[in-house]
Amino acid sequence: MSDIGKVRLRLPSSIKAGDVVRVRCLVIHPMERIERDKSGKIIDKKYQYIDKVTVTYLGKTIATFDTTQSVSENPFFAFTFKATDPGKLVVSFHDTIGAIYEGTADVAFG
Amino acid sequence: MRDESMTRRQVLGALAVGAVVGMTVVPRPAAAQTFGQNETVEAALKRVFGGKPIKDGSGMITLDIPLIAENGAVVPVSVEVNAPMTPQSYVKHIYVVADKNRIPVVTRAVLSPDSGQAYMGANIRLGETGDVRAIVEQSDGTLWQVKREVKVTVGGCGG
Image (cartoon, helix red, strand yellow):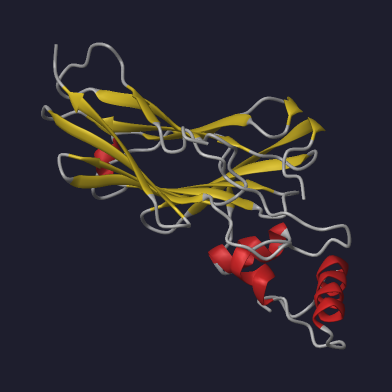
């Protein structure tokens, strides 16, 4: 899976200062499920799934998600933030093998 | 064990682990605990909220999830809370809990007043037909919940 870690962020096309903006983001990630053998025993290995998502805007963390394997493959998250100043919105996904996938969007008022 | 009583599944699981490692009946559910799996929803809620009362929040929480999920592997859910988001009083956490999943606590969103609105959306997995709850914790610690039954045609949690 070479696509692992591709992050897509979607913001509304026009944002005005002071708006509460709804953002949708998606990351390509397998979110491995716990596997079991025939006897029902859990196969012991390092499962790769995203366990933390953080959203930063203007350098300030505005929301985090703690996620488990009950979240679907290629996870999608939506959240809101209050657009006060133009700047960068960064969403980073942390998975259990220590990889960090980041997506950024520029917040600009049009 | 977080919960003193073991469920049948946990006992069987522990036995299976013991048998494979060549041990007798010493339960070693350590792996299960780390993953937080095979937890009943009651145990999970007790662990997360410590037995605090949860009020019915049907007037303020909108839980948007399909009534019938054909594919349990991807179920879109969104939670919107009609509550102020000011530094004095805001929604601190939104939990999504799927009662029948082996990992009941699906996700926890930690919000701040800068979010502007208490809203979150995610795609979750559902193992089988059962209730899905949204639990909201406000900054003063008050807990509210709504739940809705979702019918799952094909489960998505696998193993």
